[in-house]
Length: 300
Ligand SMILES: O=C(O)CCC(=O)C(=O)O
Ligand SMILES: [Fe+2]
Image (cartoon, rainbow, N blue to C red; front, side, top):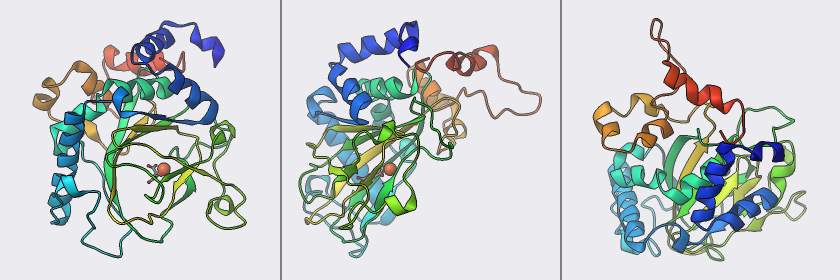
């Protein structure tokens, strides 16, 4: 990877990383496969409150349960036996989510891992409550690439914490340095909770408003929540320009909405992706450029 750092693509990303005070965080990502970015390097508290409200609105729209966003820390899901309630594809639901995916800190980290041509794969939110079920054994978020895995990330997970992540809160489990292995965990390696677990993980603590960022190859899971109340987050999944996105954003956002955002938003959601194209409507040279250039440098 080092030989590709002498490029304008890398310098452009590094400059953003430096300006945002994130140099230690990209170093930790390289060495350990994850990093936690504190709220003061992410967004002001008012923005955080807007996101919490928008998540409460989505949850109400999709389940009928109204939770006052000021009470996430003590609330409970209407289905008492359910460990998690997740809502996928929330980008169209509220303009604040569109601002979230354009957040400079989140984007700088996504570009560091997946290049300037990075795409948003999906943004979802998760509400997690007290329950003994192991919902997330060890896995990676990068699926379907056979081993040996390439040295660069094909996926980047940016988890935006909306409540504190402290002991007993159902914390994200990370296996440090697992991104350096060239394969995914096997099913028999996935239960990190058992006494004789072959692979152990560490629990990630963070204040509400932090970003927990991990590499597409990082082995991770999640501890069951022991405390009352909810753990709430946003999960931003980014991916390389040649990968398939989880959501078909290209056909979800009409031009009027795209025109309200900076040009980069259209690129980020894949609105000018090269593939798939319809018979008789091949991509323009401009559309080709993103993907063709990405083939020359891991940071392009
Ligand atoms: O809920 C967690 O702590 C981890 C969830 C997870 O695996 C993911 O966001 O990819
Ligand atoms: Fe995951």
